Length: 266
Image 1: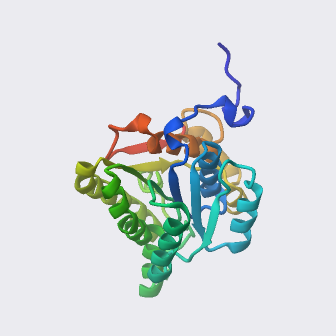
Image 2: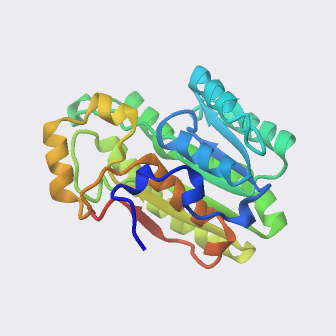
């Protein structure tokens, strides 16, 4: 058997696994309009899931939903500022009303804006926490009663290898992402008796349009080459395919784990 030199260049979703248990399953994705989140939306929709996604970027969210309109179930875009807890609660209620109880939650939304220690204010600190971890807890809180009633469910919290690598220049972000592991383990213990699985999906440096535009330079490319064991770009689809597995029944006994997808860097 031969494999393509660049697995990301394979032709469409047919080259990869299909998960029958995801068909018609209601999936909620936060921060789904662009980047890694958009790939999550695309991949779950291609599995025949009923996908809803939150984002503050209305134009990008509407465009993605329209682009995927020929899926078995057109994804439902719900504009939502996840730092507004009232809006978050209403958004979850709207998703349930439209698609039924949420069976899979992908807590993806985050903002890795760079900042120096001395520039952090109480206000910016609270905003960073709200953007990068607080919503993960409160979206989970809003969907777990339905999962408990079904005695099944999967929650996937997005982490980061940044704090593992001791990266600087964004301390509130790295602190938040380190805390995701604690959130995952605590929820996994409390929800395990209801057959609800909770895992952290930990990306390496994923080559989204934003990362290329803002931070990828020759120094960064050299860091990737030296850090990763696999000398290839990590793409959003690589994360999405792992999320599919963690959401599907195939991973029914995997919980409280940190699943690192980073080409072998951390």
